[in-house]
Length: 626
Image (cartoon, rainbow, N blue to C red; front, side):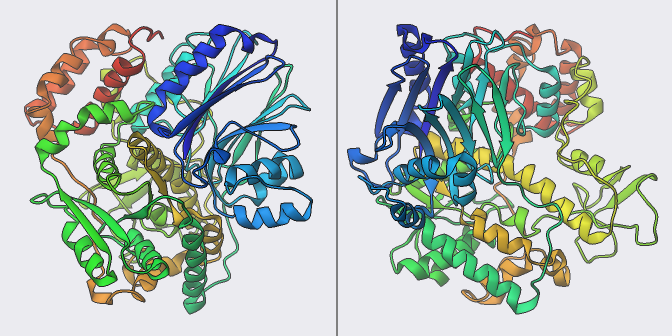
């Protein structure tokens, strides 16, 4: 796990001293991603400059350092992540005559790209990664991202046509030799405030981009840029597995995934919650590794959603070396500076706080942790809408969605159990249920922000074709929606503490097996994630598995009226929010007073605004132009 950055020019200016200085500055901003070593490389022709920081996981010797050159001398790579099937690929490449000087997966990836080309190599990879590969013979730069979007990659294209830059962190793009990338895109700002994060491919400033999961970009020497998709989650996969065969398929795929992802030359352990996903991953990892597997949990005693007791019970049943750290509200408030510092783009999901805490705690003993991320999105773990339209009606009439679990009547999910959501289409429903800032509140706070990007099509719905189609649509939008937010959160929090987090449930073999299972098998008996429940029952007593989906909760609304009040009031009267011309002072004050007096609960909207302001102070205080 590492950090990468670089600049690519259409002329030979990259060898000039200012480019070297700029890349060094970009590298310094991602030092926490790779504290073990660093490296730079400039193309002898002067067109490309690579910067790299290393968190050493495999082959801790200098043979694993980057930038890495192929033994043919044809290409150079910088790479963030892990290729879990690198040993299989290495055997295949040796049959083609490749020789290897290290035990690293980086060298195998480098050879694979030369042997099979970008598209052919990417289709063979099973891992989490973002890399930049330069083919010196073709003078072509390739930027690529893994199938699920586990590792981030951003890039900037100079509007004057002078070149491009790329980085693991969005805030590095403001340090390129070409200066400020561009003005704020107000439609993306609208999207951020509604969804409290910025989904790919969108970014906050003009001329900047977030590479989508399963995509790669080629940049030619003359400045031509082409983006291609190499993997996409199928919208309507064929399902051919039911019953025990479905459970066995996931069991086998998960066994293989965890066996691959346990390979490391540094200490490895677990993130453990009180749910289903991380206990299942922990159970399989413990059986494979033997005694002494460490597991880490953050507790919040006295708060209604504390999972520590459930996690402790799992740890005892699975014979894990359990480590629990209980924290208070004051502890959580004390790490707010870390919350701001970890965010390389505006990110207003407050659950980054416990992720930072557990990452810091685990890093005391570990360099790699396995987590259970991805289980909800792939295995139907969320409450979600179920069609009312079996009698042939369509979505031209308002689509009313009430609260309730799958299997309880013919209705779906609202954000609260007492809430009813009326939506014309499933797209409207999903945008509404994932919004933390209502359209009416946003209109009075920021009247100039009228709409999200016209090409924002995450929730686009192509017409009702039965309940199975609707279920697959739900999984697709959650994979490219909620999952991307969660993965970004984990990357920000873990890399801030120089910890690599691996996600076995997003292994390509596991994903492919999950797609073969009838969606409704996951929801039999009114419970979600039935396949994962049945798998966990093979490791712990069925009665001990928690049926309640919980998370790490903090009294954010109370904090804003108490400990965070001075910061919130300063934010609403000074700084970017007031000077940008986007936000209305009177609207901000009215919105704040409603929350302060208890007439409304605006904690998430206020947190989105506060996060935007703090991100500006951390990264853009010298330039925040619209």
